[in-house]
Image (cartoon, rainbow, N blue to C red; front, side):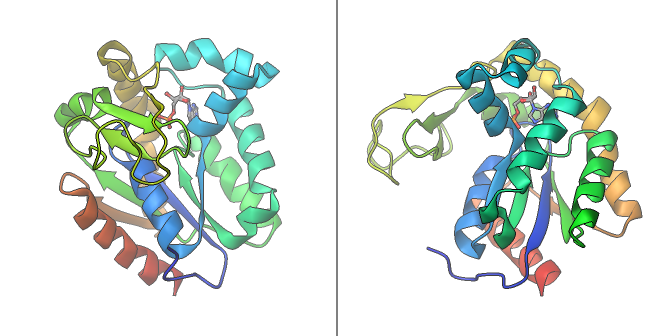
Length: 227
Ligand code: AMP
């Protein structure tokens, strides 16, 4: 349930390697603050499933754990940001992932007189990421995320949120691809931490603990940067 609606449209970025919990935490913030979670990974997976030209171009890169071209991702993000629901404010999960994308985002927001409220870096140990990623799965009905070890539904096999019983695992959530995805993060995305720090927009949070505790810390940051 939405408890703390933000009245001015906010733009928040969650930064962090694959497995840091960006998707999980974005969904919590979405529910708590009435923001829209915008995941370029989800948008790309939908494009792949729909067989669009962008999806066809992205498929092999995603399966290999590399980064899809800036041009494709920026176009997808631009279209999604223009949808009316995004006027409530957005949490970007998995975007930007390169400096080119970060600059494009600044430009897109400037067109409507906006700028980001904060880029929040979820700080985690790489060594824990493989276990986190390889155990995760999602409710096919509502997208709620679960994990074999860290977050099982109350009744195994049944989604707590929507009661669905079809669960799916991502094709790229395997040990080999995870190594490539972590490498792509360190080479191309981690420099964004310095990028946002230099703009005075960086916040950091220790994201190695319990999901609920991290969510509480994030909510405090969001309240601070949006009030
Ligand atoms: P995610 O769901 O965020 O883990 O993304 C899954 C995959 O989609 C990544 O490994 C990339 O191949 C691709 N992807 C998602 N977002 C981006 C982005 N902003 N830039 C480039 N590739 C992306």
